[in-house]
Length: 494
Image 1 (tube, rainbow, N blue to C red):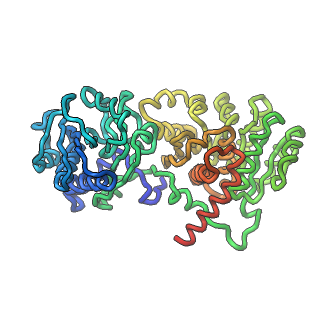
Image 2: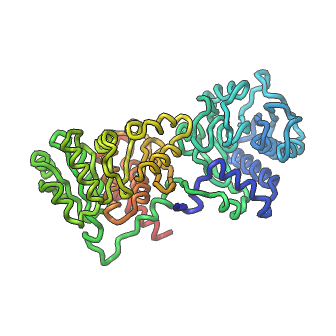
């Protein structure tokens, strides 16, 4: 299982718990970590807000302990602050009890009758909460959506599960700022957690590196540190054949635009050669629009017979008839590095006997995922998107790129990445076709499926930001060149 660069690694709830447990063995007492966590939250508040009446909502566990530290430090800095405790404070244990003992200010029980604050610190429950909010906590969570800019969450907004990003029972706090520790959790990137966290600050609290290494497994945030490492600049002695040859399988004339977008994506992502395989009607349309991309009407089997065509994109505008199904089977039987998108995914869902293999990247959106893996999709509200994508990848033996505002890439070996940097205006017709082509172009250059999918998704989002609000899918391929030029220049100077 691959592990991404340490600064971009995510930590699950269990991994964070294991690191916390290992810290004392590595020479850092748990109370020291709590003090530093509270200090990090207080510092983040001080950077963003001026002193104002502040209520720190403290839960019955260690998240509440962090809250008592926050309150003490803000009071020492001259802030008017009080704590509101959820539950019986006499039942606090361990570090949380010690943090409360060190807090000498006012503590009220959580109540509707408490004074109104100018700022609320949500230290009720952390990332490991396993049951829905209820009572006063649920009431406060419901009210939080109307004043999220006045709420700072400790670790995650209470009610958001750290692994899945799901709001347990459908209710959770909304925050304008979330301060988490050591590393982001998957729930900071997965919807709806991503939307309800607001700005996320990751604080270094002195967790020993040895404690982290004992805990870490295999998911990462899909940033340039992960994706960009796979995009080495071309060598001086390279030529187009060394950069690979991507074949895009086109449907008929009525849907030819999808294949054309995919082909342009492949070429801009760096494939040395790109060819569209099409029938005569579609070929005429492609040739009228394209110059640098070749168009062939040879039988698909003949085109696949040339091993130099080392990557294939199949599905955009392909169609769903018997001829399309036969073409898809030919591609899979050729065992090329392949991107299966759009219509190809519907055909796979219809025919469980198609010979999928480990050189494939499948790119379903939520509806396509449900058709491909209906039993896993039924579990999505319970297990979340990351676990669902991993389960699908293990079952199918292919790399799964589960698209959305929180795109998840998962490999059969359990490696996974979450990408949350794509802008909302990327949700436009044809953008998925360009993404499929970009991944195909990266596969043609020799990237393994998981690496190509991570890099393709990252570049896709960066290209959308480069193109700007109001972009269409036609704008994406040319924007990729600008993104790559900027990233390569940054890599040289960094």
